[in-house]
Length: 255
Image 1 (spheres, rainbow, N blue to C red):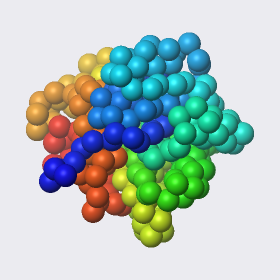
Image 2: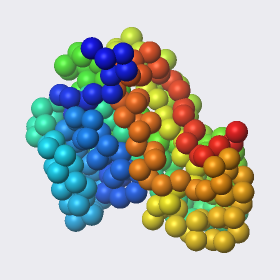
Image 3: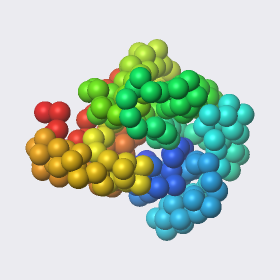
Image 4: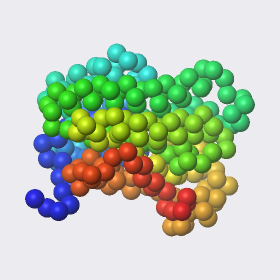
């Protein structure tokens, strides 16, 4: 056995928000490491390209269209993954939303609930469902949550999003503490500004982009593929004594 074992051979992973951006990169990287992967997102047509890329690695890839705000849809996601791929070992909670940009004082109840239900509630309840699926085979597993540097530092115009991502960091620690005895490790990544469609409004804003580049030790923003390695680490035996941790992936902006 290698000292640092990054192999995911024989493992099955679920990645929410897996149709594009960071989620797509993570799903493909998990497959490259040997896992079979189920990707979930709301629109089935958006998942086709990611599934094809997963299968191109030689691993099994499936898509289960899922609205993470729907509890029945989360239950179906877990059930379909087990039915088609046999088991679940890894969950990556990547799906998130931020429908508004502006002062938090202008946020209405509907927008607040949309952010919290998508970014926090769904993560908790899907993690509970996957925990049960992992307990069924009794060989342990790994849950990786996707937070943000906004969870460490208030982001102007992204108030509710920042609150939700701070909650994810604590949820990671709570679940890690309680589920460690089950052989389930729970960790988190916190990306900075990454060049994705989700964050296009930020990196296309000249002032925001300039500030992000200037405050970054690496003097640039990140790319989606640069987030995937950390998730493979957390999913694999290479991180077997690591749980409850959040790894900041922001090019040194918070250093």
